[in-house]
Length: 396
Image 1 (tube, rainbow, N blue to C red):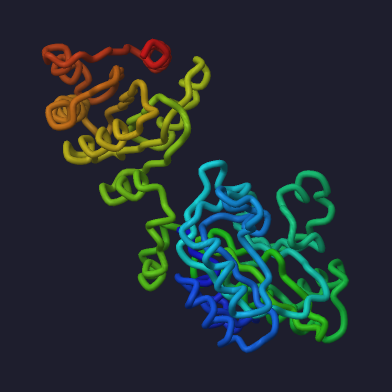
Image 2 (cartoon, one colour; image 1 turned 90 degrees about the vertical axis):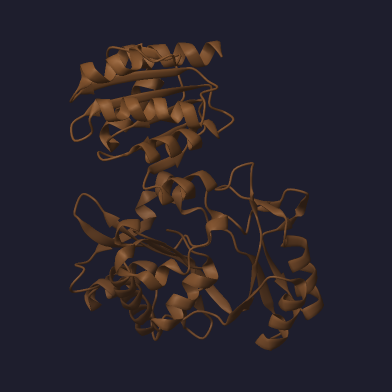
C-alpha cells in the first residue's frame, strides 16, 4: 500500500524524524493560507500523487508547470496550486496517462547545503532490511544504481537490533558527513530503520535527504510503502489509503478476494495459483501474445468470485480474448466449469474464451463445458491453450 508524501512525513514527525513544517491544501485559497501559516519567505508547493519524479514532471496541458515549485508569496502559492489542482501530472513513473492532482503540500523552505539519498528495502538474498545511501541525492537513483553502483553504500541490519552506531559512522564517513551532522544523521537513520520495521514497510525512501547549512540532517521528501500482507497488524494505516490513486479494477478485485494486477496486453488471464498464473503469462508471451493482467482466483474460489473476475476482465476494453487456466488441486474442475457457465449467464462473453482444465474432476468438468451451448475453445495442455488464445486474440 502506498501513501502520499504529506502522510509519510506525518509518520516521520511522530517518530521524531526531522522534516520541514508543511500543510496539505485542496484549493488555491488553502494553499495561500498554508503559506501564511508557515511564516517564512520561501515555501514549496508540491503536487501529491502516488508517483515519483514530480519535480521533473509536467502538467499535460501546460508543459511549463512542474509538479514541484518554489514560491515566495501567498499569491504565488495560490497561483501554483491553481495550476496543479485538478490537472494531470505526467512523470517518469506515471507514463503518458499521468495522474490527476487532487491535493498539494505547501512546505517551508530550508537552507540546503547538500542533497543526499537514503532508502530502506528488504534484501531477499539475506532476508534482512538494508539501508542504502548515496551522495547522489535529488536525482533518479535507479540511474545511479545502473551506471555508477559504487556510489551507493549499503548497511544491512537485524530487525530486532536496529541500525548500530558504528554502521552509521561508517556511512557518514563514506557520505562525507562530519561534525555535529553525524549525531543528526545517527538520530534520523536509526529512527527511520525502527519505523521501517515497526510499521512493516516494504520501502522507505528519502530523496533528497538534506544537510542544512546549520548541520541538521532532514527528510526533504518521503516515500513509504507498506506490505499489504501485514496491514492486519496496522488498522490505523488503512485510514491513509487513497483509493483514488489506485487502479479501479485492482481495488474491485481486492474487495472480491482476488489477486489482480493490470497490465498492458490484450489477453485476459484467469488462473488459480500465483505460480501457474506467472507460467501462463510467460507462455502467452512465448507464443507472441501480450497478457492483459495477472489474476489469481486462489484455490477456494466460488462462483461469485469467478463471475466478478470475468466482469473485471471483460471490463478492460483492451482485452480481445480470455484464457481460463485451472489446475484442480483444492479447486475442483467441476466448480470452475459451472462457474464459467454461470458467469456467461450473468456477464456474457463478448470475446473468444479458451479454457484449459487439469486435475481434480477434470473429465467431469470438461463434460460440463462440452455439453453447454456456450461457445468455448477447449485446450488439452498449457502450450495448446497459449497458442489458441494468442491466435484468437490476433483474429479478433
